[in-house]
Length: 208
Image 1 (cartoon, one colour):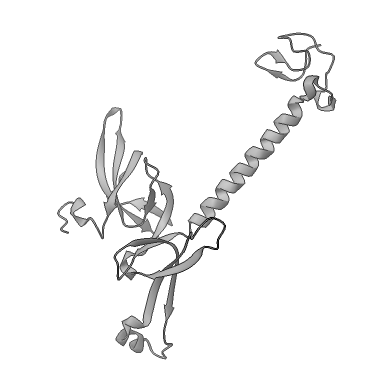
Image 2 (cartoon, one colour):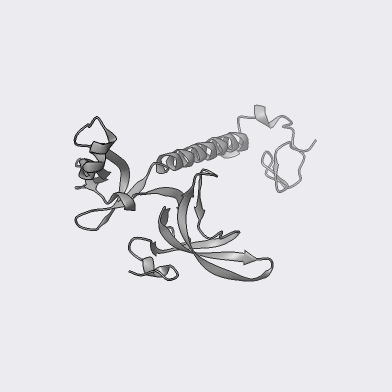
């Protein structure tokens, strides 16, 4: 009887291609030549693959809450957790309207100091209009794609030569997802060119 565990016609039990093997139920075979058991390795690889998928999904889950914003003083961009807080609690909405500076918008982030030493945990007060969430996607160069980014999208064209289009990344509450403005359609590749705050000239008719 042929071996019940084959890989491209190779019999792991006898070491011969297509040879007859006396091990029918490979799941009970524990003493394999050179200590190698294909079933045990297969089970281990499946577990490692499952753990890798779980880790990847957990990373994606954390990245859903990654934001960026432009510092109101030095103009630099920071990525981290978004936090808004008020200096004073007012009774009426009109009071908040009269004191817009009462609300602070910040990006909280960590910075390495040196190997083996505690990291610094910092926050940057940012311009609220510039705050955008990470989409969970990266462009063709591995760059993170955020709300407000201007991207060059290469689209399929029903079998004809593909063409490119410049789009703005924005959140669509109707589909609860991030879409590319101007109905970019079927996408082959995406490249981040800039963003609407630093590079408005990249948009048609935009001025810096």
